[in-house]
Structures are given as structure tokens and as C-alpha cells.
Length: 167
Image (cartoon, rainbow, N blue to C red; front, side, top):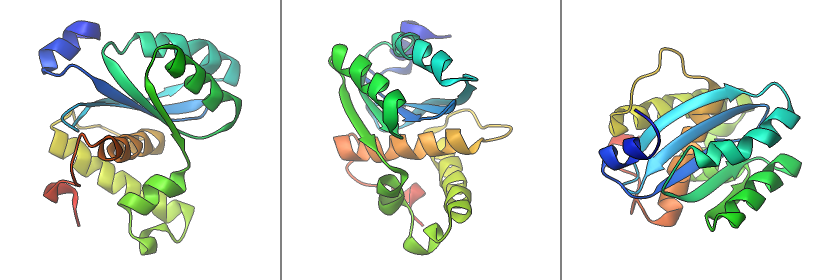
């Protein structure tokens, strides 16, 4: 099931798309109830192919209200331009922003440590959301999940971090 039918079936009318930007891009969609709907990692192979794909990716998510992108440069500007053109709320941030909100300082002493903790928390978000469990969770998908969690907290779709996700 995909597209608009999937959104209507899931019982929500708007979503937030979280993007861990890169040639290998992590994507995660959250519903207005703050729960994760789907997540994936997509290897575009080149910045040029990613650039061409942004329009289609946003078209594939009807009833979208917001886009949150971690990363910068020309590719982030593409997401911003396309989001703005569609009237979507847009936020660009660095990893330090969502990590500070969701991870303890001791869990961020190194990039490898932060990625490991992010994966563990992302798995808890998947379980809490009752989203399909991954066979393997790539770090870009895990980070997209946490970018999205940060986004739904910022939008107020979740008033606070759910108890199941607190440590």
C-alpha cells in the first residue's frame, strides 16, 4: 500500500518528512500523532541524481506538512526551495541540535558513540510507533528517525518525549 491511500488508511492527515541528507539519504515519515510511519535509506549514487529526486520524493508523500533536513550546502537548499514552493514548513539543522535534545552529553563524546546511541534510540522509536522492525538499520535511517522525532517535538505534535523513549 502506498501514496495517499496509505496515509488515509493510517488515519492521519498530515506528516513530517525527516531527511538525513547525503548521497545515501535517510528518510523517515512521522504522522501528526508523533509516531513513525515508515523509514528507509536510499542510495542516490550522486548529488546530481539526488537533486533530480527531491521533487519526486516530496510528491510521494501526500498530506505533508513539514520537512526537517539535517545537512547543509546546495542539496539542503534544494529541499528548502521545493518545500517552500509547496507551502511546507521547513527546518534545516545540524546533528548537534537533535543530539543535544535527545542524547545525553556522555553519549556524544565521539561521532561513533553518538551513532551507536542514535541507532539504539531509533530502534525504541520503531518499537513504540509499532512500525515494521528492520532486519538491518542503517545509520542514516536511524538518524532520520531521530531528526523526525526532534521535529515532531518542535512542532508540538508530541508534547514531550514519551515515557517509553526516555532512559
